[in-house]
Image: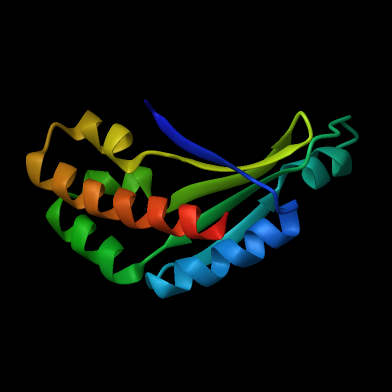
Length: 127
């Protein structure tokens, strides 16, 4: 599958706060939080679902992958989404292994698997 998504009993804000704590444990920081609902409302568009996009990065890992293959920059920073669907809060991400497979580079696949495992662990601990 292209993505990894879990359900949580937390609301959006609680899920994001918990996620930020677990990401720090893996030396990932949240570079940017994008509130899609708010942005669409600013543009005069109707959108009633809560949907946040977090761009996360571990600078040491980013440097490592970019030194190996700068095309990996097309996939950075990693994205984690927190949203509600049918009354349920979800946390998910596109799998780095799915994205990086487009490069056909075995070493990059190993890097991506490590990052993916660590991000999945962060998501699972945030639930």
